Length: 556
Image 1 (cartoon, rainbow, N blue to C red):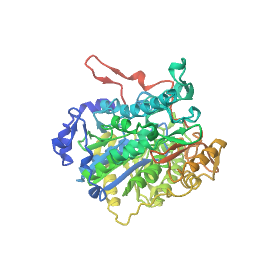
Image 2: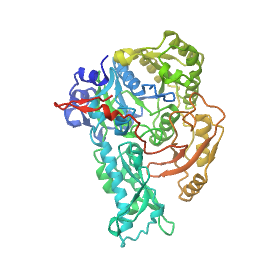
Image 3: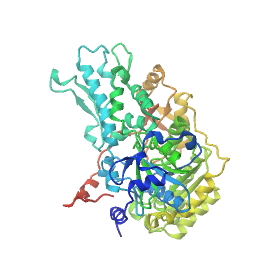
């Protein structure tokens, strides 16, 4: 069996000019990054046309170590829609190097449903992550310079600074650090730390901005801390938002690549869904809707995280109106949620699948609260038994939802044609009316309670003393009208990663609440969530290499 990398290399790529042509663009309308990548200028966005496009969200049941294949399904669905005659683009996030070198691997799909060039996309791509990292750390350096400079009149209290540094790598050793050691010429010693770049507020801002002016405004709204007399300090007070925006000038433009079947793929931004909003940029989505009739997009991790944030943060912020939702499940994942050990997932077990359906059912209930039609994609694996697939289809049918086996991993778009037909049918239903779960104007505790009880299934919400103090700070700053971006484990509907399936009789605990005023949301942090992941004992990096001809090896 060929690896994903071998499959990607076995199919010749089209010149990026040809892919642009499929979007109705000329060579002069794109900014080339070689033969197979390009940037798309913001002038191509047509708000009137984008408002009439069909936006399809792909999400999933709660993730498991067995993998669900959400990105693979998104790409396969786009290929299938194209085969069926639809004018379509797939719009996805960019991979972070942390997972690429950690345990999860890359994020370009798999099998015959991939976006290419795989190696470039999974590594440095067009430098967007580096630009976000540099813009973020420029602000960090300016803050420390302000603390060091005796002539500075802001009077920032270093004990209140909440802005850390970032890097695009999993490195648990950097979560908590002391900066400024080495004497008076080396800065003011203070506690700080690193987040992964995907968790940077600058990344969130990039993905929610509508253009350069909006980008600068949002960057200026980043909350830094307080002065010694308790006056709040924002990035605009340090006069650095313009320089940050200058570093992000090219990163603000979405990237054009292609699927293995030559369907246009727009990749932009890369926030994680367990610690950030988990969706690609507003600009990329609007770009796709401006250039295609159908846009297939994806929200990270399970529907309780990425999909909820897609609807309540991104759609509300940008005025997007999605047309339909695809919920991805696998037989293996359902068995895992049914209590079966990872090593036994390849053995047919109808009882375990039946138990695991509780997780799928909860996600279906959640998605239907947003007023959108839903279809289930059963992403097939070689060991799936026909009777297990039938069990899932029959259960979904009783819930009034269609479920389709998808074999696009081995067949490409052809393996997702029935799903594509169902998606077109649902998307053309003009009675669909998207409705968010909450309005931003509601009190913060009400918004958090709504997410915890209606989406997670919790009985209620508890707050630590620190979280209560954070709530008072948010109210004092007048930021209680912001959206909610929950930081929660992706492994469970609850905040306990050891509770798969559909947990019952639990409460959510808010440990602390971070402010992302520039992005336009606050971040309640639950359980033991960390914004800087660590590496596993055996890393993916150990299997990655490069040969004498410059070919990358071992990516997956």
